[in-house]
Length: 454
Image 1 (cartoon, rainbow, N blue to C red):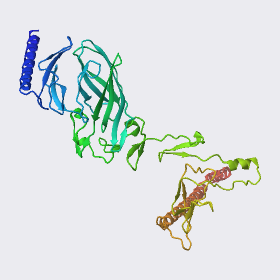
Image 2 (cartoon, one colour):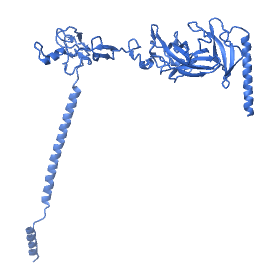
Image 3 (cartoon, rainbow, N blue to C red):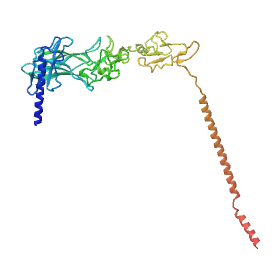
Image 4 (cartoon, one colour):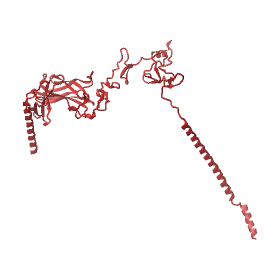
């Protein structure tokens, strides 16, 4: 417990010395510069009171305004410094409008690499005698995409109720813009601070998170933890990601669904057109072409086909497809836009096209490749890839090898069969030679032996 008391006393002693140093430094000159602190304060939340050691706001030179920053030495202390005005030259005024608040600072919170939101803030102080309930919102937010391209649709920032602000208390009024791509954005947002009585104070807050400025990679204070110099690649288009090796952004993510088409030629994210029907036309016939990012009016239903089904006189049956395909590729020929002969491509001499299945072909979707069959002939010039004469020697060798192997196998089987047959005959002859005598022969032989014995 004694250790804690001693630590608190030492801390307060250090803060007091720091405050006197700043007070002495600021009292040497009536006008502050950009690097010299002009004021210092300690904030005590429990009493909602700020102790000012030097009168604030500070007195700044022309073209400068007074802004409060958090002190690096003392956590509960703030330093007042002078900084240049914004581009419009409008200084921060005290007690603007009828709401008793003083605007001290405005800008963006520090960004980190994994952040998914950009947080705007306006720091205000209650200069009145009673608490005031504040609300903040934004009516417009524009980002400068290119020199002649200002986008005021895709960025939507959200504020809300900021609660009660008590006398001499300060607070950051915040608005949030949610997006996965927070870098490479520059513009301004119109914000409105209001109270419960309907009083409104309007502010314009600028933002800039571009990575490359004037050809150099710079890392501002608010993006120190967002990227490093080695992470940045200089890209040729604003819609290519310098933190992803200049690969295209996901347009629908970067522009919140307002520019969903990436043009590979211009390398830009473009809005998708609204395919509304022309006057007097049906909206069901309007289609969107994903490849060209354009709208097309489909042709009307085939009236001649209906007439053919109805059997009206003078209407002949459809014998061939008369619609001209949208996507035809003439490999060895030129497109024929005339309708005299009904052909789609005029092939070069010696070339023709493969037969077309009209029943399965859709002229609005499929690509018809024409002039791809080489016929040869007089005057024909073959422009295709060189035709190599196939060498059939390996095939012939393989075929004869297989025939030879088959013949040898059959000969072997035949020899084996003959051998087995002869072997069987020899075995039969051997058995007949060693065959036992019959019963009659045995009796005769026995009788002869008995006669000799007598």
